[in-house]
Length: 550
Image 1 (cartoon, helix red, strand yellow):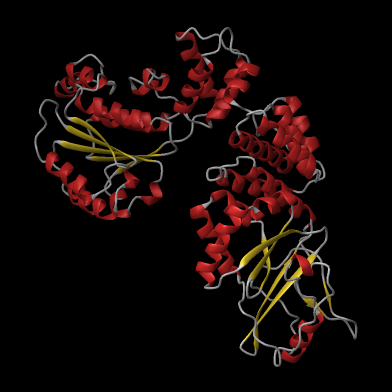
Image 2 (cartoon, helix red, strand yellow; image 1 turned 90 degrees about the vertical axis):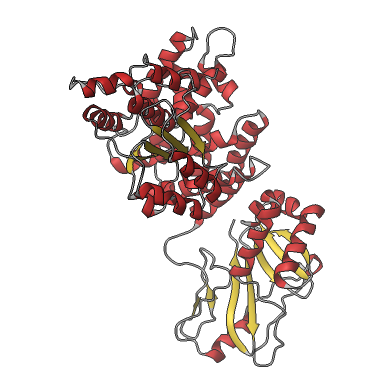
Protein backbone atom coordinates (compact mmCIF):
# COMPACT_ATOMS: atom_id res chain seq x y z
CA UNK A 1 0.00 0.00 0.00
CA UNK A 2 1.29 3.47 -0.89
CA UNK A 3 2.46 5.61 2.01
CA UNK A 4 -0.13 8.32 1.37
CA UNK A 5 -2.91 5.72 1.65
CA UNK A 6 -1.39 3.87 4.57
CA UNK A 7 -0.85 7.02 6.62
CA UNK A 8 -4.08 8.81 5.77
CA UNK A 9 -5.42 10.58 8.87
CA UNK A 10 -7.88 8.54 10.92
CA UNK A 11 -9.01 11.49 13.09
CA UNK A 12 -9.32 15.24 12.66
CA UNK A 13 -6.50 15.84 15.16
CA UNK A 14 -4.10 14.05 12.78
CA UNK A 15 -4.71 16.59 10.02
CA UNK A 16 -1.56 18.71 9.80
CA UNK A 17 -1.64 22.38 8.88
CA UNK A 18 -5.44 22.72 8.62
CA UNK A 19 -6.26 23.71 12.20
CA UNK A 20 -8.61 26.50 11.09
CA UNK A 21 -10.81 23.90 9.38
CA UNK A 22 -10.51 21.22 12.08
CA UNK A 23 -11.70 23.56 14.84
CA UNK A 24 -14.76 24.67 12.88
CA UNK A 25 -15.81 21.16 11.88
CA UNK A 26 -15.35 19.71 15.37
CA UNK A 27 -17.52 22.44 16.88
CA UNK A 28 -20.24 21.76 14.30
CA UNK A 29 -20.10 18.01 14.99
CA UNK A 30 -20.17 18.42 18.78
CA UNK A 31 -23.17 20.72 18.58
CA UNK A 32 -24.97 18.63 15.95
CA UNK A 33 -25.14 21.63 13.60
CA UNK A 34 -24.19 19.93 10.38
CA UNK A 35 -25.30 21.23 7.00
CA UNK A 36 -26.38 19.29 3.91
CA UNK A 37 -23.56 20.46 1.56
CA UNK A 38 -19.85 21.18 2.04
CA UNK A 39 -17.28 22.48 -0.44
CA UNK A 40 -13.61 21.77 0.25
CA UNK A 41 -11.19 23.79 -1.89
CA UNK A 42 -7.44 24.13 -2.19
CA UNK A 43 -4.32 22.75 -3.92
CA UNK A 44 -3.93 19.04 -4.63
CA UNK A 45 -2.58 16.61 -2.09
CA UNK A 46 -3.29 18.63 1.05
CA UNK A 47 -6.08 16.55 2.64
CA UNK A 48 -9.39 17.53 1.04
CA UNK A 49 -10.54 13.97 0.28
CA UNK A 50 -9.20 12.74 3.63
CA UNK A 51 -11.20 15.44 5.40
CA UNK A 52 -14.30 14.47 3.41
CA UNK A 53 -13.95 10.88 4.62
CA UNK A 54 -13.39 11.99 8.22
CA UNK A 55 -16.51 14.14 8.02
CA UNK A 56 -18.49 11.22 6.56
CA UNK A 57 -17.32 9.07 9.49
CA UNK A 58 -18.23 11.71 12.06
CA UNK A 59 -21.69 12.17 10.53
CA UNK A 60 -22.40 8.45 10.88
CA UNK A 61 -20.33 7.62 13.99
CA UNK A 62 -22.59 5.71 16.34
CA UNK A 63 -20.74 6.85 19.47
CA UNK A 64 -21.09 10.53 18.58
CA UNK A 65 -24.80 9.99 17.89
CA UNK A 66 -25.26 8.25 21.26
CA UNK A 67 -23.42 11.04 23.11
CA UNK A 68 -25.53 13.74 21.48
CA UNK A 69 -28.77 11.84 22.16
CA UNK A 70 -27.84 11.38 25.84
CA UNK A 71 -26.73 14.99 26.22
CA UNK A 72 -23.15 13.93 26.93
CA UNK A 73 -20.20 16.04 25.87
CA UNK A 74 -18.54 14.74 22.70
CA UNK A 75 -15.09 15.41 21.30
CA UNK A 76 -16.48 15.42 17.77
CA UNK A 77 -13.85 12.90 16.69
CA UNK A 78 -15.04 9.68 15.02
CA UNK A 79 -14.37 6.75 17.36
CA UNK A 80 -12.99 4.43 14.62
CA UNK A 81 -14.41 1.52 16.65
CA UNK A 82 -18.14 1.43 15.98
CA UNK A 83 -19.49 -0.61 13.08
CA UNK A 84 -20.05 2.45 10.93
CA UNK A 85 -16.51 3.81 11.41
CA UNK A 86 -14.95 0.40 10.73
CA UNK A 87 -16.98 -0.02 7.54
CA UNK A 88 -15.84 3.38 6.26
CA UNK A 89 -12.20 2.73 7.19
CA UNK A 90 -12.31 -0.55 5.29
CA UNK A 91 -14.07 1.01 2.27
CA UNK A 92 -17.17 -1.21 2.52
CA UNK A 93 -19.76 1.32 3.68
CA UNK A 94 -22.49 1.12 1.05
CA UNK A 95 -24.01 4.45 2.09
CA UNK A 96 -20.77 6.41 1.59
CA UNK A 97 -20.25 6.97 -2.13
CA UNK A 98 -17.14 8.57 -3.66
CA UNK A 99 -17.61 9.89 -7.17
CA UNK A 100 -14.87 11.16 -9.47
CA UNK A 101 -16.49 14.05 -11.34
CA UNK A 102 -13.74 13.93 -13.95
CA UNK A 103 -15.16 10.65 -15.29
CA UNK A 104 -18.82 11.36 -14.45
CA UNK A 105 -19.27 14.80 -15.98
CA UNK A 106 -22.59 14.38 -17.74
CA UNK A 107 -26.07 15.30 -16.66
CA UNK A 108 -27.16 11.63 -16.85
CA UNK A 109 -24.57 10.71 -14.22
CA UNK A 110 -25.86 13.40 -11.87
CA UNK A 111 -29.50 12.45 -12.47
CA UNK A 112 -28.68 8.86 -11.56
CA UNK A 113 -26.97 10.12 -8.38
CA UNK A 114 -30.02 12.21 -7.51
CA UNK A 115 -32.40 9.27 -8.04
CA UNK A 116 -30.29 7.16 -5.68
CA UNK A 117 -30.13 9.98 -3.14
CA UNK A 118 -33.92 9.91 -2.75
CA UNK A 119 -33.70 6.42 -1.26
CA UNK A 120 -33.11 6.06 2.47
CA UNK A 121 -29.69 4.81 3.61
CA UNK A 122 -29.38 1.04 3.86
CA UNK A 123 -27.37 0.95 7.07
CA UNK A 124 -25.88 4.30 8.09
CA UNK A 125 -27.67 7.28 9.61
CA UNK A 126 -27.11 9.40 6.51
CA UNK A 127 -26.06 8.89 2.93
CA UNK A 128 -22.89 10.83 2.13
CA UNK A 129 -21.85 11.64 -1.43
CA UNK A 130 -18.19 12.69 -1.81
CA UNK A 131 -17.78 14.31 -5.24
CA UNK A 132 -14.10 14.80 -6.05
CA UNK A 133 -12.96 17.38 -8.62
CA UNK A 134 -16.51 18.67 -8.78
CA UNK A 135 -15.47 21.55 -11.07
CA UNK A 136 -15.30 18.98 -13.92
CA UNK A 137 -19.09 18.64 -14.03
CA UNK A 138 -20.76 20.08 -17.10
CA UNK A 139 -23.07 23.08 -16.92
CA UNK A 140 -26.17 20.93 -17.33
CA UNK A 141 -24.90 18.55 -14.62
CA UNK A 142 -24.48 21.47 -12.22
CA UNK A 143 -28.00 22.62 -13.00
CA UNK A 144 -29.33 19.16 -12.22
CA UNK A 145 -27.40 19.05 -8.95
CA UNK A 146 -28.59 22.53 -7.99
CA UNK A 147 -32.21 21.42 -7.59
CA UNK A 148 -31.23 18.78 -5.03
CA UNK A 149 -28.99 21.24 -3.15
CA UNK A 150 -31.92 23.68 -2.94
CA UNK A 151 -34.26 21.06 -1.46
CA UNK A 152 -32.03 18.29 -0.07
CA UNK A 153 -33.48 15.18 1.57
CA UNK A 154 -32.81 15.09 5.32
CA UNK A 155 -30.87 11.83 5.04
CA UNK A 156 -28.30 13.08 2.45
CA UNK A 157 -25.08 15.10 2.79
CA UNK A 158 -22.98 16.23 -0.18
CA UNK A 159 -19.24 16.84 0.31
CA UNK A 160 -17.65 18.37 -2.79
CA UNK A 161 -13.91 18.80 -3.31
CA UNK A 162 -12.13 20.86 -5.95
CA UNK A 163 -8.76 22.34 -6.85
CA UNK A 164 -10.36 25.00 -9.09
CA UNK A 165 -13.09 26.70 -7.12
CA UNK A 166 -13.35 29.53 -9.66
CA UNK A 167 -15.02 27.05 -12.04
CA UNK A 168 -17.86 26.32 -9.63
CA UNK A 169 -21.09 28.21 -10.46
CA UNK A 170 -22.09 30.87 -7.95
CA UNK A 171 -25.45 29.15 -7.46
CA UNK A 172 -23.65 26.06 -6.14
CA UNK A 173 -21.23 28.07 -4.00
CA UNK A 174 -24.07 29.89 -2.27
CA UNK A 175 -25.69 26.61 -1.19
CA UNK A 176 -22.63 24.92 0.32
CA UNK A 177 -20.48 25.63 3.37
CA UNK A 178 -17.03 26.37 2.02
CA UNK A 179 -13.67 25.49 3.58
CA UNK A 180 -10.42 26.71 2.04
CA UNK A 181 -7.40 24.48 2.62
CA UNK A 182 -3.91 25.93 2.66
CA UNK A 183 -0.58 24.40 1.75
CA UNK A 184 1.28 22.73 4.59
CA UNK A 185 4.35 24.54 5.87
CA UNK A 186 7.77 23.06 5.34
CA UNK A 187 8.09 22.42 9.08
CA UNK A 188 4.77 20.54 9.18
CA UNK A 189 5.80 18.37 6.26
CA UNK A 190 9.16 17.53 7.83
CA UNK A 191 7.45 16.65 11.12
CA UNK A 192 5.07 14.27 9.37
CA UNK A 193 7.86 12.75 7.27
CA UNK A 194 9.92 12.06 10.37
CA UNK A 195 7.01 10.22 12.00
CA UNK A 196 6.43 8.09 8.89
CA UNK A 197 10.16 7.39 8.49
CA UNK A 198 10.28 6.24 12.10
CA UNK A 199 7.30 3.92 11.65
CA UNK A 200 8.77 2.47 8.45
CA UNK A 201 12.30 2.17 9.92
CA UNK A 202 13.71 4.41 7.19
CA UNK A 203 17.11 5.87 8.07
CA UNK A 204 17.20 9.33 6.52
CA UNK A 205 19.14 12.49 7.34
CA UNK A 206 17.65 15.92 7.91
CA UNK A 207 19.00 17.30 4.65
CA UNK A 208 17.13 14.69 2.64
CA UNK A 209 13.92 15.37 4.58
CA UNK A 210 14.34 19.09 3.93
CA UNK A 211 14.77 18.40 0.20
CA UNK A 212 11.66 16.21 0.07
CA UNK A 213 9.58 18.80 1.94
CA UNK A 214 10.73 21.56 -0.41
CA UNK A 215 10.02 19.42 -3.49
CA UNK A 216 6.50 18.59 -2.25
CA UNK A 217 5.55 22.29 -2.40
CA UNK A 218 3.12 22.11 0.53
CA UNK A 219 1.42 18.82 -0.39
CA UNK A 220 1.35 15.94 2.09
CA UNK A 221 0.53 13.37 -0.59
CA UNK A 222 3.50 14.40 -2.74
CA UNK A 223 5.79 14.44 0.31
CA UNK A 224 4.84 10.88 1.27
CA UNK A 225 5.16 9.68 -2.32
CA UNK A 226 8.67 11.15 -2.56
CA UNK A 227 9.65 9.61 0.79
CA UNK A 228 8.47 6.23 -0.45
CA UNK A 229 10.50 6.71 -3.62
CA UNK A 230 13.79 7.47 -1.84
CA UNK A 231 13.22 4.70 0.74
CA UNK A 232 14.10 2.11 -1.88
CA UNK A 233 17.81 2.97 -1.57
CA UNK A 234 19.99 0.67 0.50
CA UNK A 235 21.40 2.10 3.70
CA UNK A 236 20.86 5.60 4.99
CA UNK A 237 19.13 8.09 2.70
CA UNK A 238 21.53 11.02 2.45
CA UNK A 239 20.99 14.38 0.79
CA UNK A 240 23.13 13.39 -2.20
CA UNK A 241 21.27 10.11 -2.65
CA UNK A 242 17.92 11.87 -2.41
CA UNK A 243 19.02 14.40 -5.05
CA UNK A 244 20.10 11.62 -7.36
CA UNK A 245 16.88 9.61 -6.97
CA UNK A 246 14.56 12.60 -7.26
CA UNK A 247 16.52 14.16 -10.12
CA UNK A 248 16.83 17.47 -8.27
CA UNK A 249 19.60 19.85 -9.24
CA UNK A 250 22.15 20.63 -6.57
CA UNK A 251 21.83 24.01 -4.91
CA UNK A 252 25.29 24.93 -6.19
CA UNK A 253 24.14 24.48 -9.80
CA UNK A 254 21.02 26.58 -9.21
CA UNK A 255 23.05 29.41 -7.67
CA UNK A 256 25.56 29.29 -10.54
CA UNK A 257 22.74 29.36 -13.10
CA UNK A 258 21.10 32.34 -11.37
CA UNK A 259 24.44 34.12 -11.23
CA UNK A 260 24.85 33.60 -14.98
CA UNK A 261 21.49 35.11 -15.93
CA UNK A 262 21.91 38.01 -13.46
CA UNK A 263 25.27 38.80 -15.05
CA UNK A 264 23.92 38.43 -18.60
CA UNK A 265 26.09 35.40 -19.35
CA UNK A 266 23.68 33.37 -21.50
CA UNK A 267 26.28 30.91 -22.73
CA UNK A 268 27.23 29.93 -19.18
CA UNK A 269 23.57 29.61 -18.19
CA UNK A 270 22.84 27.36 -21.17
CA UNK A 271 25.86 25.20 -20.38
CA UNK A 272 24.60 24.61 -16.84
CA UNK A 273 21.08 23.81 -18.03
CA UNK A 274 22.33 21.38 -20.69
CA UNK A 275 24.73 19.72 -18.27
CA UNK A 276 21.90 19.05 -15.84
CA UNK A 277 19.55 17.87 -18.60
CA UNK A 278 22.20 15.45 -19.92
CA UNK A 279 22.73 14.15 -16.37
CA UNK A 280 19.03 13.28 -16.14
CA UNK A 281 17.90 16.01 -13.76
CA UNK A 282 14.23 16.98 -13.82
CA UNK A 283 14.04 20.27 -15.73
CA UNK A 284 10.66 21.13 -14.20
CA UNK A 285 12.14 20.74 -10.73
CA UNK A 286 15.21 22.75 -11.76
CA UNK A 287 12.94 25.51 -13.06
CA UNK A 288 11.02 25.57 -9.76
CA UNK A 289 14.32 25.83 -7.88
CA UNK A 290 15.32 28.82 -10.00
CA UNK A 291 11.95 30.52 -9.36
CA UNK A 292 12.29 29.89 -5.62
CA UNK A 293 15.80 31.35 -5.63
CA UNK A 294 14.58 34.45 -7.51
CA UNK A 295 11.71 34.83 -5.04
CA UNK A 296 14.10 34.77 -2.10
CA UNK A 297 16.45 37.20 -3.81
CA UNK A 298 13.52 39.56 -4.37
CA UNK A 299 12.44 39.35 -0.73
CA UNK A 300 15.97 40.10 0.46
CA UNK A 301 16.23 42.96 -2.02
CA UNK A 302 13.03 44.74 -0.99
CA UNK A 303 12.71 43.83 2.68
CA UNK A 304 16.00 45.21 3.96
CA UNK A 305 15.76 42.65 6.76
CA UNK A 306 18.73 40.55 5.75
CA UNK A 307 16.60 37.50 5.00
CA UNK A 308 14.42 37.45 8.12
CA UNK A 309 11.32 36.81 6.02
CA UNK A 310 12.65 33.62 4.43
CA UNK A 311 13.63 30.28 5.87
CA UNK A 312 17.25 30.07 4.73
CA UNK A 313 20.73 29.45 6.10
CA UNK A 314 23.12 32.34 6.65
CA UNK A 315 25.39 31.03 3.89
CA UNK A 316 22.56 31.00 1.35
CA UNK A 317 21.43 34.48 2.37
CA UNK A 318 24.95 35.74 1.77
CA UNK A 319 24.95 34.10 -1.68
CA UNK A 320 21.54 35.57 -2.50
CA UNK A 321 22.75 39.04 -1.57
CA UNK A 322 25.73 38.65 -3.89
CA UNK A 323 23.55 37.48 -6.76
CA UNK A 324 21.00 40.30 -6.37
CA UNK A 325 23.61 43.01 -5.78
CA UNK A 326 23.25 45.88 -8.23
CA UNK A 327 20.00 44.47 -9.62
CA UNK A 328 16.72 46.36 -9.33
CA UNK A 329 13.57 44.57 -8.08
CA UNK A 330 11.95 45.13 -11.48
CA UNK A 331 14.69 43.07 -13.10
CA UNK A 332 14.19 40.19 -10.64
CA UNK A 333 10.42 40.28 -11.22
CA UNK A 334 11.01 40.20 -14.97
CA UNK A 335 13.19 37.09 -14.58
CA UNK A 336 10.57 35.43 -12.37
CA UNK A 337 7.95 36.05 -15.05
CA UNK A 338 10.17 34.40 -17.65
CA UNK A 339 10.73 31.26 -15.63
CA UNK A 340 7.09 31.05 -14.56
CA UNK A 341 6.25 31.10 -18.26
CA UNK A 342 8.88 28.41 -18.83
CA UNK A 343 7.29 26.30 -16.09
CA UNK A 344 3.93 26.40 -17.85
CA UNK A 345 5.59 25.53 -21.16
CA UNK A 346 7.44 22.55 -19.68
CA UNK A 347 4.14 20.69 -19.45
CA UNK A 348 3.69 20.78 -23.22
CA UNK A 349 7.09 20.34 -24.86
CA UNK A 350 8.86 17.09 -25.66
CA UNK A 351 12.31 18.68 -25.30
CA UNK A 352 12.47 19.67 -21.61
CA UNK A 353 15.45 22.03 -21.79
CA UNK A 354 13.84 24.15 -24.52
CA UNK A 355 11.71 26.38 -22.22
CA UNK A 356 14.82 27.03 -20.11
CA UNK A 357 16.70 28.07 -23.25
CA UNK A 358 13.91 30.45 -24.21
CA UNK A 359 13.85 31.97 -20.72
CA UNK A 360 17.64 32.51 -20.83
CA UNK A 361 17.33 34.17 -24.24
CA UNK A 362 14.56 36.48 -23.05
CA UNK A 363 16.51 37.33 -19.90
CA UNK A 364 19.11 39.02 -22.13
CA UNK A 365 16.39 41.09 -23.75
CA UNK A 366 15.17 42.20 -20.35
CA UNK A 367 18.70 43.23 -19.38
CA UNK A 368 19.20 45.36 -22.45
CA UNK A 369 15.80 47.03 -22.48
CA UNK A 370 15.44 50.41 -20.83
CA UNK A 371 12.36 51.89 -19.27
CA UNK A 372 12.72 55.11 -21.22
CA UNK A 373 13.34 55.59 -24.96
CA UNK A 374 11.42 52.67 -26.46
CA UNK A 375 11.97 51.79 -30.13
CA UNK A 376 9.40 52.31 -32.81
CA UNK A 377 8.80 56.06 -32.74
CA UNK A 378 10.11 58.04 -35.67
CA UNK A 379 11.69 61.08 -34.03
CA UNK A 380 12.11 64.25 -36.03
CA UNK A 381 14.80 66.79 -35.36
CA UNK A 382 15.12 70.35 -36.59
CA UNK A 383 15.96 69.75 -40.21
CA UNK A 384 17.83 66.59 -39.29
CA UNK A 385 17.32 63.23 -40.92
CA UNK A 386 14.67 61.14 -39.23
CA UNK A 387 16.07 58.46 -36.93
CA UNK A 388 14.71 55.43 -35.08
CA UNK A 389 15.76 55.12 -31.43
CA UNK A 390 17.09 51.89 -29.95
CA UNK A 391 15.34 49.89 -27.24
CA UNK A 392 12.42 47.48 -27.18
CA UNK A 393 10.64 46.60 -30.38
CA UNK A 394 7.03 47.53 -31.15
CA UNK A 395 4.50 44.76 -31.40
CA UNK A 396 3.67 43.11 -34.70
CA UNK A 397 1.03 45.05 -36.55
CA UNK A 398 1.68 48.23 -34.54
CA UNK A 399 2.79 51.56 -36.06
CA UNK A 400 4.17 54.49 -34.08
CA UNK A 401 4.63 57.72 -36.04
CA UNK A 402 5.60 61.15 -34.78
CA UNK A 403 2.60 63.09 -33.56
CA UNK A 404 3.01 65.91 -36.12
CA UNK A 405 3.50 63.71 -39.19
CA UNK A 406 1.19 64.21 -42.13
CA UNK A 407 0.10 61.45 -44.47
CA UNK A 408 2.52 62.68 -47.10
CA UNK A 409 5.35 62.70 -44.58
CA UNK A 410 4.49 59.17 -43.51
CA UNK A 411 4.54 57.95 -47.10
CA UNK A 412 7.85 59.71 -47.66
CA UNK A 413 9.22 58.16 -44.49
CA UNK A 414 8.44 54.65 -45.76
CA UNK A 415 10.54 55.31 -48.84
CA UNK A 416 13.52 55.97 -46.54
CA UNK A 417 13.34 52.74 -44.55
CA UNK A 418 15.17 49.57 -45.70
CA UNK A 419 13.08 46.57 -46.65
CA UNK A 420 13.77 43.02 -45.53
CA UNK A 421 15.58 40.60 -47.82
CA UNK A 422 13.02 38.31 -49.37
CA UNK A 423 15.03 35.10 -49.22
CA UNK A 424 18.49 33.81 -48.39
CA UNK A 425 19.88 34.74 -51.80
CA UNK A 426 18.93 38.38 -51.31
CA UNK A 427 20.33 38.51 -47.78
CA UNK A 428 23.44 40.42 -48.87
CA UNK A 429 21.88 42.40 -51.68
CA UNK A 430 21.57 46.16 -51.72
CA UNK A 431 18.67 47.80 -49.95
CA UNK A 432 15.41 48.07 -51.87
CA UNK A 433 13.52 51.33 -51.68
CA UNK A 434 9.79 51.48 -51.01
CA UNK A 435 7.93 54.13 -52.98
CA UNK A 436 5.00 56.31 -52.01
CA UNK A 437 1.84 54.36 -51.23
CA UNK A 438 -0.14 56.37 -53.74
CA UNK A 439 1.77 54.85 -56.67
CA UNK A 440 3.04 51.51 -55.31
CA UNK A 441 1.19 48.21 -55.77
CA UNK A 442 -0.59 46.81 -52.72
CA UNK A 443 1.42 44.00 -51.00
CA UNK A 444 0.00 40.50 -51.07
CA UNK A 445 -0.64 40.13 -47.33
CA UNK A 446 -0.13 41.90 -44.03
CA UNK A 447 1.40 39.71 -41.34
CA UNK A 448 -0.40 41.22 -38.36
CA UNK A 449 -0.03 40.24 -34.73
CA UNK A 450 -3.41 38.50 -34.78
CA UNK A 451 -2.44 36.36 -37.76
CA UNK A 452 0.88 35.36 -36.21
CA UNK A 453 -0.83 34.54 -32.88
CA UNK A 454 -3.31 32.33 -34.74
CA UNK A 455 -0.48 30.53 -36.51
CA UNK A 456 1.23 29.78 -33.19
CA UNK A 457 -2.04 28.62 -31.62
CA UNK A 458 -2.77 26.21 -34.48
CA UNK A 459 0.82 24.93 -34.44
CA UNK A 460 0.53 24.11 -30.73
CA UNK A 461 -2.34 21.73 -31.51
CA UNK A 462 -0.06 19.76 -33.82
CA UNK A 463 3.45 20.20 -32.39
CA UNK A 464 4.03 21.80 -28.98
CA UNK A 465 7.80 22.00 -29.41
CA UNK A 466 7.51 23.84 -32.71
CA UNK A 467 4.97 26.26 -31.22
CA UNK A 468 7.39 27.00 -28.38
CA UNK A 469 10.08 27.90 -30.91
CA UNK A 470 7.70 30.14 -32.84
CA UNK A 471 6.92 32.23 -29.75
CA UNK A 472 10.41 33.70 -30.03
CA UNK A 473 10.50 33.82 -33.81
CA UNK A 474 9.66 37.10 -35.55
CA UNK A 475 7.99 37.22 -38.99
CA UNK A 476 10.05 39.76 -40.93
CA UNK A 477 8.47 39.59 -44.39
CA UNK A 478 5.85 37.76 -46.40
CA UNK A 479 5.68 37.78 -50.19
CA UNK A 480 3.65 35.75 -52.65
CA UNK A 481 5.40 32.50 -51.82
CA UNK A 482 7.89 33.10 -48.98
CA UNK A 483 7.44 33.75 -45.25
CA UNK A 484 10.73 34.82 -43.66
CA UNK A 485 11.20 34.28 -39.93
CA UNK A 486 13.93 35.71 -37.73
CA UNK A 487 15.27 33.96 -34.59
CA UNK A 488 18.12 34.76 -32.23
CA UNK A 489 19.95 31.44 -32.00
CA UNK A 490 21.21 28.98 -34.57
CA UNK A 491 19.74 26.11 -32.56
CA UNK A 492 16.22 27.54 -32.96
CA UNK A 493 16.85 28.22 -36.67
CA UNK A 494 17.92 24.61 -37.24
CA UNK A 495 14.87 23.22 -35.42
CA UNK A 496 12.37 25.39 -37.31
CA UNK A 497 14.15 24.71 -40.63
CA UNK A 498 13.83 20.96 -40.14
CA UNK A 499 11.88 19.65 -43.19
CA UNK A 500 9.18 18.05 -41.04
CA UNK A 501 8.65 21.25 -39.04
CA UNK A 502 8.64 23.38 -42.20
CA UNK A 503 6.00 21.11 -43.74
CA UNK A 504 3.79 21.45 -40.67
CA UNK A 505 4.21 25.24 -40.51
CA UNK A 506 3.70 25.77 -44.24
CA UNK A 507 0.38 23.90 -44.12
CA UNK A 508 -0.83 25.91 -41.11
CA UNK A 509 0.17 29.23 -42.71
CA UNK A 510 -1.60 28.17 -45.89
CA UNK A 511 -4.77 27.21 -43.99
CA UNK A 512 -4.87 30.51 -42.08
CA UNK A 513 -3.80 32.96 -44.80
CA UNK A 514 -5.25 31.15 -47.80
CA UNK A 515 -1.90 31.30 -49.61
CA UNK A 516 0.71 28.63 -50.10
CA UNK A 517 4.20 29.66 -49.11
CA UNK A 518 7.53 28.22 -48.12
CA UNK A 519 9.29 29.02 -44.85
CA UNK A 520 12.73 30.57 -44.58
CA UNK A 521 14.26 30.93 -41.12
CA UNK A 522 17.35 33.00 -40.34
CA UNK A 523 19.37 33.69 -37.23
CA UNK A 524 19.64 37.44 -36.73
CA UNK A 525 23.07 39.01 -36.41
CA UNK A 526 23.80 41.08 -33.31
CA UNK A 527 22.12 44.51 -33.28
CA UNK A 528 20.27 43.70 -36.51
CA UNK A 529 17.20 45.85 -37.02
CA UNK A 530 14.33 44.48 -39.05
CA UNK A 531 11.49 46.60 -40.31
CA UNK A 532 8.48 45.27 -42.20
CA UNK A 533 5.97 47.63 -43.76
CA UNK A 534 2.45 46.93 -44.94
CA UNK A 535 0.41 49.21 -47.19
CA UNK A 536 -3.22 48.52 -48.05
CA UNK A 537 -5.89 50.12 -50.33
CA UNK A 538 -3.97 53.32 -51.08
CA UNK A 539 -3.89 54.15 -47.38
CA UNK A 540 -1.25 53.46 -44.76
CA UNK A 541 -3.00 51.36 -42.13
CA UNK A 542 -0.31 49.26 -40.50
CA UNK A 543 3.47 49.08 -40.35
CA UNK A 544 4.94 45.84 -39.02
CA UNK A 545 8.30 46.54 -37.37
CA UNK A 546 10.52 44.05 -35.57
CA UNK A 547 13.77 45.17 -33.94
CA UNK A 548 16.18 42.48 -32.75
CA UNK A 549 18.90 43.34 -30.28
CA UNK A 550 20.68 40.26 -28.92
